[in-house]
Every structure is written in C-alpha cells, then in structure tokens.
View 1 (cartoon, rainbow, N blue to C red):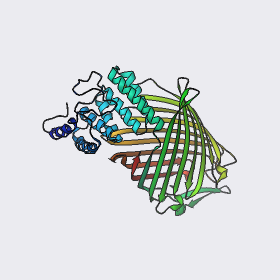
View 2 (view 1 turned 120 degrees about the vertical axis):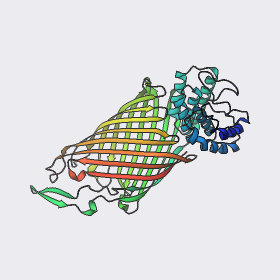
View 3 (view 1 turned 180 degrees about the horizontal axis):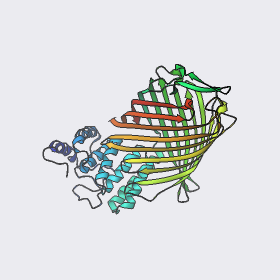
View 4 (view 1 turned 45 degrees about the horizontal axis):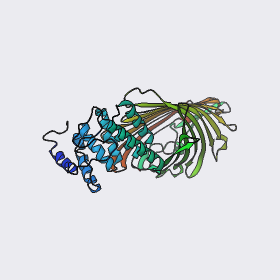
Length: 466
C-alpha cells in the first residue's frame, strides 16, 4: 500500500492493529467483502484491517487517524480507512472529505462511491446521494456483493427521506462592513432646478459609513416522500432567518425571514417542481418589503459529460409580488422566466442561473416599468483535505422605461448595473461545527450618480450543521 513506508507508518500500523484485533468489519454500505478476500476489479471493500470498533473506541481511533491525515491524506488506502471510521463515528463531514479523495484517486472503488453517497445522505443531501448511487449502478459491473451494498444503501436512503426529521444549520459571525448605511459614493450632486443646473454638496449623513456587526442566521428544512395517485413525489418545507446587528448604525440593522413550500414529482421524463414562498426584509426594526413568490419549473438530467459528474437543466416561470408597507408607490410584481444548470461532481458542485423579467408597478412610480436581467454562478468545492469553499458571483441589470426625475440628469431613464462577489472558506473544528471566513464585494453603477454604491464585507464565524 502506498502510504506504508517503513519510517512514517510504524506508529500508524500500531494504531491499526488495535482496529484489526476486533476481527469484525465496519458495517458501512460499501464494505461487503470478508477479511482476507481479494477485492475484485471493481473494488467493493476497504482494506481488510478496517474492522468494527466498539463505540467507546471510535473517538480515540478517529483522533489518531486525523493526527496522521497531514502525512497520508491523498493516499486512497489511508483515506478509505479514515472515511469508513469517520462514517461509523458519525463524523459525516470528515467522512465526506476523505471519501471524496478516495474516489478522485481510485475511481474504480465502487464501495467508496456508495459510502460517499451515504455520507451525503447523512448530511441531508439526499438528492446528491441518490445521484451517486445511480452512477455506481450505471458505471460498474454489479456482482452480488455490490448489489447487496446498493440495495442496503437505497433502503437506508429511503428510510432517511421518510423519517429523518428536521435538518438545518446555525451560523454566527462577527464582521466589518465598509458601507453599513448603504450610503452614497459621491460627495456632490447636480440637480436641475427651473431649468438651471446647480451643484450641491452631499451631507455626511448620506455618505457611506463603515461599522462592525454581529450576524446570526439559521435554516431548517424537512422533506417527505409522497405518492399521489400512485405517482412518487417529494414535499419539502424550508425556513430561513438572518439578523445583522450593527454596533453604531442601528437604523440599518437588517432582518430577513423566509419560508418555502416545494413539491417535486416525475413528469414527462423529467421532474416538475412547484414552489410557494414568502419573505419579509426588515430595516432598522421596521418592515421594508414583503415578498410573495410562486415558481414553476421542469427539469431533467443531462447526458453525463465526465465520469462522476452529473448535470441537471431546469427552466420555468416565476411570479414575485413585492409590497412596501411605508412606500406603497414602489409596490409591484415581477414576472420572471428562468433557466438553471446544476452540476455535481466528486468534490464540487456548480449552479449557473439566469433569469429575465419585467417589473410592473401597481401605480405611478419614478421610472415606471423596469426590465431586469440576472446572472448568478455558485461553485462549492473541496480546497485541500478538509478545507472547503463556496464562491459566488452575480451580475444584474435593470432598465427603466420612463424618466426617473426631471431634476436628475435631464429626466433620464435610470440604468443600474450591479455586481457582487463572495468567497467563503470552511474548515471543521469538531463534529458538526465548522469555522468560516467570508469576504464579499458589491458595486453598483448607474447613469444617475445618486444610485452609485459600493461596499466590502468581511466576517469570521462558525457554522453548526445537524
């Protein structure tokens, strides 16, 4: 085995002898062969010295393996041992990263793919788990041992979907915002009064101001398998809350709460989806906007481009109703048409979304009707060993149909281009808990200078997932 060098592995061999001494294999889904058996060309089982441990021993052995990870990570034999031990110890994030490295280095290990699917399922990512199981069945020869492993995994996955209860995450962080009050980037403004342009200095009260903040957030979700008229489907609930509390700029404290109901069902060779959602955004303790959302979509899996990579394309309309309790002249509805591509690979997943819409006001408002376009790219990946990252960029454009104001730029039609980028890095610190560091940049450009804005946000915190 590649990582058993004479000098570096003596201590590790002594530790694994503790594992070998119990003589019973860890009952993970990918491990089906018995001790001493030679794995077939399609490898199903991890090395034979990985045996079942009493629950009391798991934490100690996992700690020892993690200590050796810096030296041996990247060797598929070591990573498989780490992955199955972590899976049994319910350290699912650790198992996920280790097993991802296994299938990247040794994609012929069918059992590792199955164990990776279970790690995803235990973290609540059942769709990814089902996709990986499909990949194993479609890619590898299926001898009896692998068939048993797949059948067991699918039964376990179904049980998780039916009775897994609520899953979610909680995030807390402390950070710095360079534009806490969404202030103006300019220091003077030209207004046209009675046909005569005049320049005015912008009061410091409306200029951008920086501040530190405390941010808390949480998300809960649950899914149920259904069968209406004999057709299998899936019903999901999700709730999300976020609160940002500034140290000084209390009038700009932000609150965001959203609730969604989703139903999915196979239709016409693909999958149809219906979403109902409601959201409220609060600013300074008062309701800023209430949003109601109805979204319909249909998608299907695309042809596999690379081994281990699956993609799904979805399209559909969306209606968004916006109500501003204290500024009813801004009320309106947006009718969107969207297209989304989702690709999942061994150590990463990518989401590319585009939508275009018309924002129709309920009454007369500055600028009148607005055309909107949005493009978003999100990429999540393993960076190094257990270090993972999430990166997103977005660009949006809005164009008003009518002049915004006679006193601004000769009553020009307002154009706004907005750009956003975020990078967040996570690293595990204990079971279910990850530290995080996040940096984001926002820039907004307009032909009417009063709408120019920019800002940067940096945050350190932690995330707990269950």
